[in-house]
Length: 452
Image 1 (tube, one colour):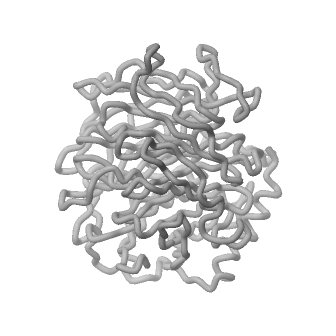
Image 2 (cartoon, one colour):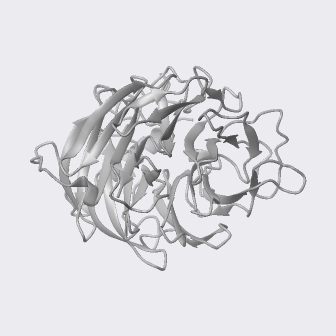
Image 3 (tube, rainbow, N blue to C red):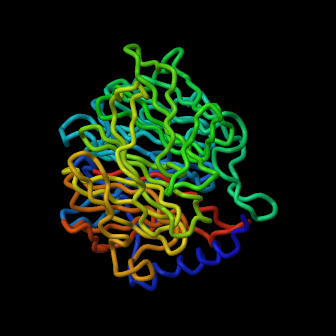
């Protein structure tokens, strides 16, 4: 795909920060000691020379104060990673963000960051004095892009790619997780001291497709299953359906592994996605799975959406994951990231391309999603304080505030959430100013957002 029109939009949307009259922090901001356990937002640069975390203390009104800039000890890819959960906040019990699956507690918090350029994982403790790096462990694979944890068990998704560039010499996008080595997941144990120990025999392949489009790995809330999305995979062994929600060239599978008592994984079950291009996902606390759908990414204009699934073998033994509703499209392009509020009533999903947007979904008691607002933060996508490049999302611990990373601009936007599914912009910070997006210029490197 030639992206000339896309990166011209990127240059225009970068100007929107100033047009909105908003300000952001920079490297010149004084680093202030802050209790990051009281409420914080963390963003990751994914920079090729040195991957960095920027930490903000969250105020009671949802606004952010710059607190700390900390190197991960490794390097990023320097280009956009088409993946979710490269940065997670957790305790030894489970994930706090982006998948807010456990109740807030006084337990020690850990921030885990993927270094896709140096093939390792950084671990930090989070406390009243900020971030302290405790470990830098090889990811046991090529290019780690997504992390998950549950009960002290950590799994990492290695995309297998050996090319870190987003564009080829002709200016065409190189699709993530489609070149190089086959993707895989591998496991570790996380200690109270914040140290990772590899689990022998834990590495598993995904569907086996080289054109995988691997996007995210996460445990189910109970820790019994590990789930991975592959937005581009079309395994011949899986008879993928064609219906009104799918095209003839249907693509995308969800890979489900049962977790063994020793932390290793059983053989994978492959589940055909409801729609096309399953990407980011989260869970309701009763275990229902909520997945975004790209539907051809930047070329599927207006086709982005979300779908829901339930866990539990059906009467004819069709495996652990079942579709529970149709694709619910939101009019956005390339819908990729999703989070749900603590009360499980509302989900928010971002669409990366065109004008960018955040859409809101209602989640019923069975976990089925229904669209509330195609554009949650304004009347339309042209007037919603969201620009092209909208990517990772994180909620505050009480779900009163939503934070959104823009990978093209290098910004973090803070929104107040409302019961009707709408959002109100509070402010925009700029931790990672980006050059104009396009071949030979900026490659939308920032990826990963977590909060509490």
